[in-house]
Image 1 (cartoon, helix red, strand yellow):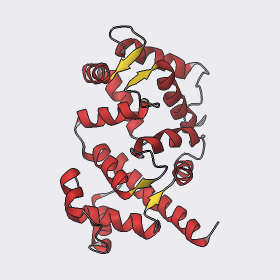
Image 2 (cartoon, helix red, strand yellow):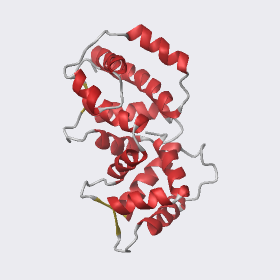
Image 3 (cartoon, one colour):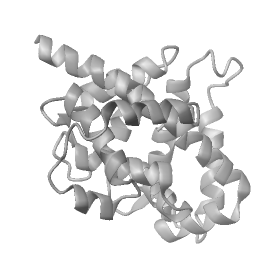
Image 4 (spheres, helix red, strand yellow):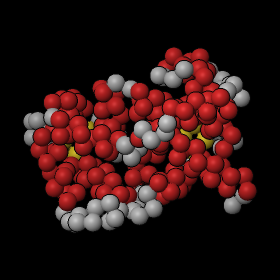
Length: 225
């Protein structure tokens, strides 16, 4: 592996850890201001005004994010292997590889095999500052693994199991082997309104917004994104 590739991966892990803290609310306001001051107007991506219009970030915030992204990954794109290494750092007591795989493909909306800055910041804008409806649509897309516009029980099972695997035995010391299946059965029973074996986007949105338990569970899952 080249020194450039190593620097890119190690640097992006550090950058992602800052974003993770921001998502989970563990990054202090003072720290955010320090980062803004240190990185102000160092890079200016093409189409900055367009990104500002398309996301919930200010021009200054986009400059900060772009600097971190380009500084540590000069190629301007992140591949799936880097994603897996990032999540392995976050969850050392579990196996994050499958969840990172699913998450990567949710970020890679154009299915090119790499996540560009535009992909990254668009998703981040939704997860950090999107409306409930926007966040739920993004979550639906994550669960819709084959991108056919529906979620079947096996897709939901794959995602939930990947989350449990990632959290690891130290997080869930009394976790039974069939816990993910039970979790999915409860979710699916509530979401599959017409009992046709699949969950549509409308069913997903309706179920999540009318059930506080589902919303709380989804919020927990969003915190590991």
